Length: 304
Ligand SMILES: [Zn+2]
Picture (cartoon, rainbow, N blue to C red):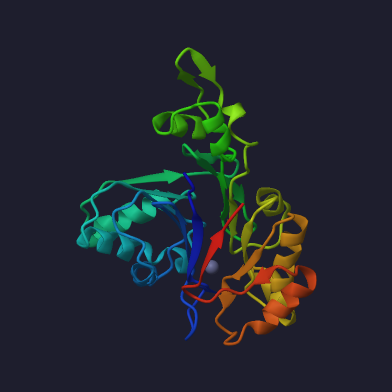
């Protein structure tokens, strides 16, 4: 079965919003599953607009505990309950994320009708699922900040239907088994998937690194990404500011994309001081041609 992966940029600004950009949040859809990276204030409205579905398998990854990345979380949990979510939701983030959610809940009493599991993770850990992993690395900020890489496991190779027919394997459940990489029995014959399937195909890789200086741990994490979403807060003229506040310029983000041999770079977490951020894109493209500057609610599909 072909599972598609897409990314919707719910909010592409940083620190404070402006007329054009909401606070940071990125929605990755993999088939029916949702992975949300950061949850700036106002994310819930963008999430609804994206028609993401309220009761799907879902995980929220928080990079760090600065307000622009987490103030949307209580509202999101509250509203998901109101809208009828019943399925467990998992929240993953750095140390302090448990305290954040529980203390809001203690004081404000979230209307909460679905189970929430919160996990604190550290650089070097990974969150494992059947068909993908999410690796965690350290970003370089003034406070602990995590970068995440979503990596699909290799997908089974292409199924050669003509060959399956030649080998007289009846269409139906046996084809499905072979497609998922399992051997089958046809009468007395044993057929191994290698006969019918092409070589395994690599899966999709998406890296999310915000509020970070360009740094080796992010470059290592991002190696070979199909899409690198990287902090690009400032233009070159504000390079000192970027250094001072633990952010990157668009050109520095492009350097990370180049060194990590990523295929596409999305400039993200754009400072509210840029109403027109096209100079940032031009500066990035001088270093890394495959740079894009997503606007809020833009969706891109990611293929391996
Ligand atoms: Zn930020």
